[in-house]
Length: 378
Ligand SMILES: Cc1ncc(COP(=O)(O)O)c(C=O)c1O
Picture 1 (cartoon, rainbow, N blue to C red):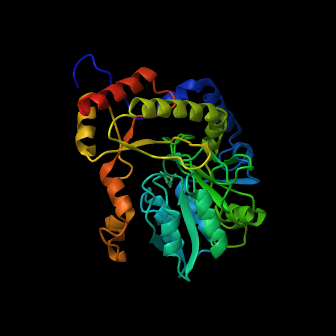
Picture 2: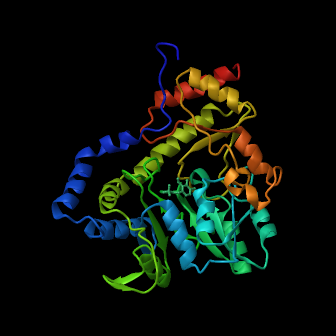
Picture 3: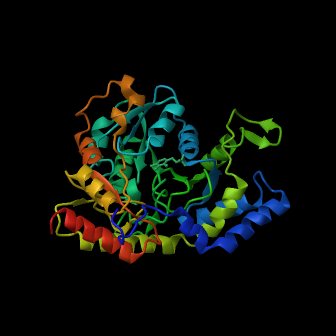
């Protein structure tokens, strides 16, 4: 990196802490001073606040986004011999949860415009054994969900939304309907509060939201050893509880989520306008709503060279994701082949995520834009 140039970080998870340090530390101290370490008030209050924020009837805190997906599948009755369709262009946790539920993961290709599951490919992947679809709001984009919800209705499939990247994202499922938060279209929405997320904690944490009381109760039991009372266990469950200290941190941060998503959107608009005349692909939003903008990805055949060039100018970038799941060693024995999901494979070769966090200074955004213009010789 040449001297005098900026260092542009991809994300700065401490910036969110410093925005509300005294409130956050006070919330943590309240938990410690009460010795309220498992369950307790902070968890209940955060669950209520999060359900209200999302416009869902129930929220159940979980230990992580992966745990949330696992219990959502189990509560939906998914198990041995069932097939669950999802995208190969996601973090492995989406597919892992299907395996944890002893079901078979079936991939369908993505739409090159939205980077989300292609509804036509989903419909083509349905077999008599298909029981559910996990829709991932990739980078926070809800596009395609509406069409996939309709397919699930027609084929009587459970729709589970992986909202690990979609906190603060909304969509309209029909023109006259109000905006709905990600996770409220399907039977359940699963969230991760991993520190780098739009709503991040100080460790691992997650939640499930649903409008179905029975499902919420089932999930609440599953995350806490199948308990109804302290020593009365209705089923074998897990220790997948949301940690109380994390719940206290999340309660403070949730109040700032809408503003943070607005800022993410203004940064992304600046990127889109600044890069508009370059030979780049952008993730499209094909539904009315609010993109949660967890990540901002561009597509170019010169991805690797561009990434190196930006690194030489002090700009950190990321790749989400470099290997589509069907080509991961973890799934090598499942009979997937290279070329089977060509859109996901192309995206894995060409996509580059630019720096993005709500406090990212606009002069850093402009420097990234200027550097990309330089790369393309303009
Ligand atoms: C799309 C997606 N699904 C699931 C997960 C898993 O969440 P967690 O890391 O909280 O288990 C992540 C997060 O990293 C993710 O990005």
